[in-house]
Image 1: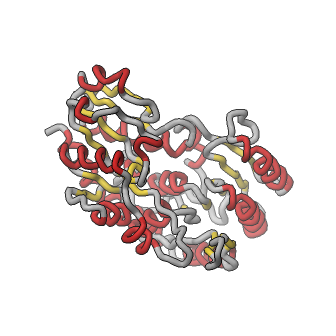
Image 2 (image 1 turned 90 degrees about the vertical axis):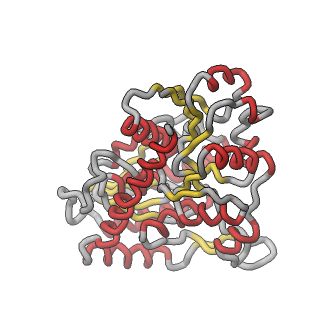
Length: 366
C-alpha cells in the first residue's frame, strides 16, 4: 500500500507528534506500506499525479474540523474530482473557543459553528470515501450539527504510544516528592504572565524539584519566532531564569518530547504535552486554553482547570481565573492523596479506544 500523507507539522512540536504517532499506527497495521509526506499548507496542483499514483490520501489528525480551514490553511486543489484516490483520516477534531460572552461550548457548537463551503466540500468528500473520525465528543457534536452522519470516535493518534498501550498504572519510578517538573508554556500570549505565576507557585511548593519551562513553538533562543512575541517571551524568560527555572524550546521536531519521558509531573497549557505524558503513563495536569483541551479532558475523565474567564461587557474582555492557583493546589493534593485515580481513568480510556482506532485504519484498506 502507498499512502499520500497530508501533514500539518511545520513548527509546533505537537503537530510533529501527531504525524509521528500517525505514521507509527499506519506501520502497525500495514508494516510494508510506503508513505509519501506532503505539507498540507501547499496546494496539490503540482503533485496531483503523485497523489493519484498512491492508494489513498490520508490526513494525519489535528484540528481539521475548523470552520474555514480550507482554503485558508489547506488550499487542496481547484477541483476535488481531480483526486482519484479515496481521502481518509484518523482522529480529527474541532478548534473551538468559548468566545461568546458567558455562552457555553454547547452554545458555540449548536449556534455558532458552521463550516464554509470549501471546508464543507472536503468533509463531504471524506464522508463519501469512508467516514469522519473524531478525537472527542465535542467534535462529534460539531459534525452532527452540520449535517454529517458517518462519524466514528477514534481518539487522537497522539494518544497511542505502542510501547505503553497495555499499561494502566502510573509509571513505577515516579519520585515523591517530585524531582522533575515540566511546565508547557501557553499557546496564547495572554496567558504568558499567568504561566510565570504558575512557575513561581510550583517553585515554592516543590523547592527541591528541578523545574523546566518548555516552549513548543520556540524560545528567544530561536530566531524564527513570531516578531510580536519576541519582547514578551524575552521578559518571561528573564523572570523564569531568576527563579532558577530551566528554559527549553522543542519546535520543528518530535524529538523534544523526550524531555518529558522522565518527568514526575507535567503541568501546563499544551494539549499535546498533556497527551504525550499520559500516553507514557506520567502524571499530567492540563490548563485548558480552548476547546481542544476542554474536549480532551472531558473524554478522558480528567478535571479541567480554566486559566481565564470572560467578562460580560461590550468588549468581552478576558480576566484571569481568580482561583487558578488554589484550584491547582487542591487538584494536586487530590491526585497525590488518592493514588492518582484520575490518571488511571485517562489511561484506561486510551486503552479502550485503541481497538477503534486500529479498526478505522484497517477499514481504509478495504
